[in-house]
Length: 464
Image (cartoon, rainbow, N blue to C red; front, side, top):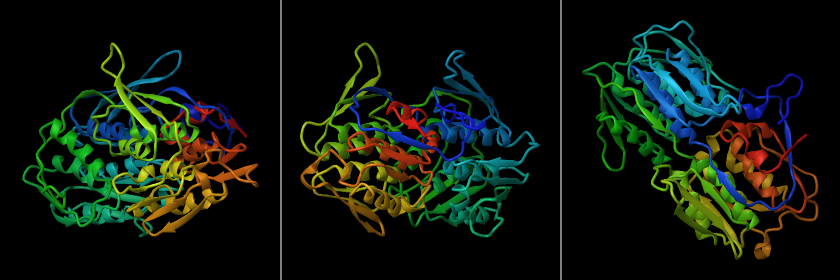
């Protein structure tokens, strides 16, 4: 950990410092890793608890920059969000949230800074449409380039004032209710647009119906995650099996709850990737094989590439552990990442160490994440001597000849990766460094704290 020039410790998750460079040297990586809590679940629970009446408890949430941005947004929306931490370590134990009960309480401060959190932006945009007061949304440099235009158009069609100040669909954005309902069409290159409506539409006035046609839906497992919360509270919704249309009646309410947050399969992909690349067994704790998270597909992908993935219960506990190991070479393959675009960086790095070609397909929406992950991964893997063929909707990674997992090439020393401030690209190349011929340096490495504080410490990163 490090503080420079008054900048705040990135692993304390209090905010971004200046762009920092991490250096990871090749070394043996094995052992047991506890996976942090799910960001997707944590943010959904924060939004739901903020819309509910009464006091909710979110147990063992993710403590990261994105979730702190969400907690801050919920406070602006009128919820009282308190943290309980372990005194000695300051580890986050729980959030206690006193909800605003559908904006029955007025709010004073109406500027919402979502930081780097796209999930917070989209879900909170819809939540703000339930109120009668205007809210202005802003965010960091990456968020200022991420368009919410389809969601804004749908919200406007439901009677909500939804304006991008610059007219480009990006923040700054002004939202003001009320929610009148109606029929709208919403293409969802990111599932977060639809999740936003599903969480807020039930709280529209009684007699209001939100009827949404979905001509495009990527990332279906995240919609199933959102619907699991509606189902858990008996909130009605209707949809055909293909999720091409949703009808959500208003007049429902979110109830306070107390529940734990499961481990994050999206974060687990990176130590699992490290196990696959290095060839050493790594055991992951905190994951639930029955959870709806789509990114558990990464473990299936590793098994198809030649890894052994073994699930078992921890003796004397209800908890599971999963061990990823590899005895033979990694093998290429073809993998459809439409439901799991966040896996692309970890998948591409793993494929770089596999024999033959690996095609990551049907994932054009990876281009509209924090960065254009398809282009960035191709460009940065090239620095390691890995040839890629970029497609409009995916990436073909041409693995090392002979399936060598040593990494690198003759000119590999002192390679510097430009992460473009994308946390998943940082973590993917940090894993790659374990089996490289020389250390890898990664610019913008502080962004890993967006979702997985401490991951670079786990890999013994040195801060430059």
